[in-house]
Length: 223
Image 1 (tube, rainbow, N blue to C red):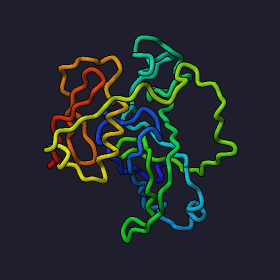
Image 2 (cartoon, rainbow, N blue to C red; image 1 turned 90 degrees about the vertical axis):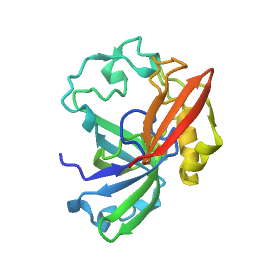
Image 3 (tube, helix red, strand yellow; image 1 turned 30 degrees about the vertical axis):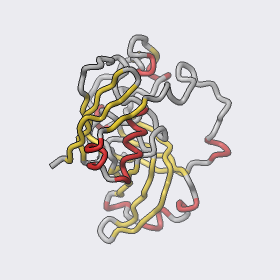
């Protein structure tokens, strides 16, 4: 299989990426590879609100898989079967994400580009296929969810100092706040004195977490 596209997202590294698609409303773009920059291949897609992305865990390539893994949802302390999880360390490192399709634009150099939101993919991730989301068959709201029965744990409160809030463009402020409220830290880390850093949309974000409060202490544009 050959990638048909790649994603341009807010996440330059794995740290900070939402744990599931759709949890945080972060913007992203799907840019097609040259052989697939064909408008006819997308004919009719504009009539769908959501799409499925089938993608390649490119940063997990070369890692050995294990029949059991430690899901972050369980604090990294209990093992579950790899096929009962969404771990990237699989026999075939393939991911599946449902994202919202905002628009399809035509770029003079890149051809058709998909503007999406809610992606849980690192910047540059190869896309293997795109399919429309069909709510009448793809949605099962009464289905059991195993060891992850709820969408999210208790959200954290996010605080900024006045100087920090002015650095980030308003268009990104809500997305970052929502992302931090969902606690991007590994669930086994809880040191209130630790300063965490993550890349987000061309900025370096530094923050601490204590007593349910995320404090953003610095936002620096990356060179």
